[in-house]
Length: 158
Image (tube, rainbow, N blue to C red; front, side):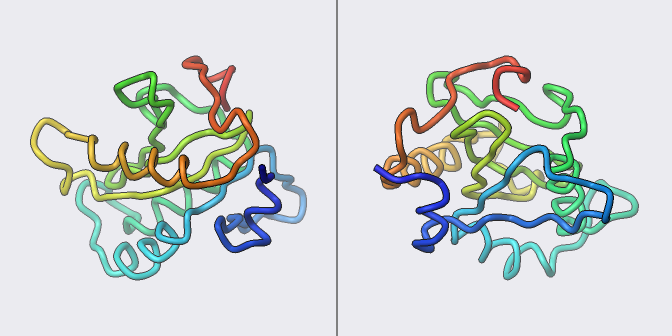
């Protein structure tokens, strides 16, 4: 079994480092699956904003991750939510244009596995392929149990 630090040192996870001001300290942690980091840099970097007025999709994700790391309050449904089926323990972080799918392995921690533009979600917002990708990635990790937090309330998870 492995810790998040070991998985990062092994290259199986990438620890996200938010660009904090000198007086700011991280309150929460974010890790990326390597595929998510590739998606951010290759796919999202060139995308134009869809609904957001001021920020590109990449800037929206950067802002959301920054807000998450510094501990800004999250609003369930607006900023994040647990995806169905609830027993899968998969969550999404949301921006105006982007959905980030992953899970919380520990309190105040999120592993981002995959993302997509909101407008690219299939009809009826079918998250099944994204949920399955996150579950498969989690199952493949030799992470110390429990691999995911089972809570639904934000104060239990983040």
